[in-house]
Image (tube, rainbow, N blue to C red; front, top):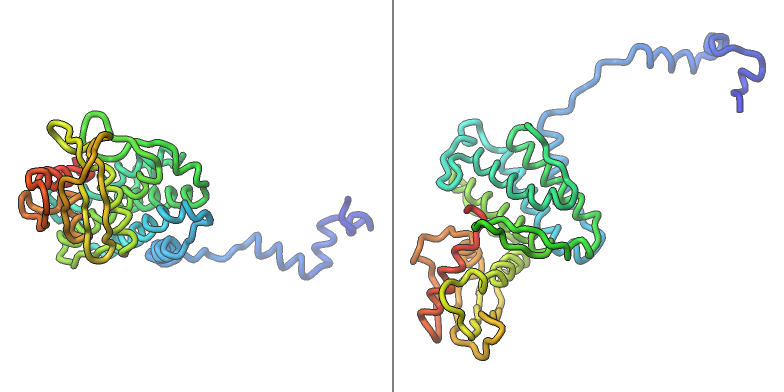
Length: 296
């Protein structure tokens, strides 16, 4: 329908000339004021806070997305604090802090690509990792529980990567993000931080579920019970073969330190644990647990 001023035979120019409000609006459009750039740290701060507080709508998705969101926010804050020299601080497995962040982003890409998230191209390491992690989190948070059952390759060693449902891969992303944040804290003289107890429990369960396939040597038709103590602890009985008929060993250790063992952050032979039953099997379990990290 034509505007009323046209219906009355008035041209747009005549209307603007006679209407102070329209004349003022057009003057603003023709002569916009200079745009004001927000402070450089504002975007990072807003994203970090939003990722901490965002709650996925689907309960099953929240179980694996919320721990990842928290570790992404903590890593984001940590990287934002680093000075230029600290980005070049040496880290044994990846050369420097920058190399470690690039490694983390590359491992995240496997999961991100599966759910249709594009990388950030040639952006600086912090931005490239953060934008990909944020997009992955947003995609997961908007997904359904059916998405969590899709099989995906896990990060880790070997010519043929282990595969597991996406829900397990997201726990691994939480695990690796926390592990590498602690690596950066250690390299820059900061104190290590443990995840929330419920997130420690998820990480420990993820690693223990992977343990049977990491065992070397002849198959043992037995089970092992692992008791993890402290925040995030629990008890797991792990069949080491489908035909396992009895528990041959009970291993106990601190839950947070066991997660660090899973990341291979303990010197070989130094991990503190107690065992009842078959001592050789206990040693094999501890050695196998240390091979489950994402650095290889």
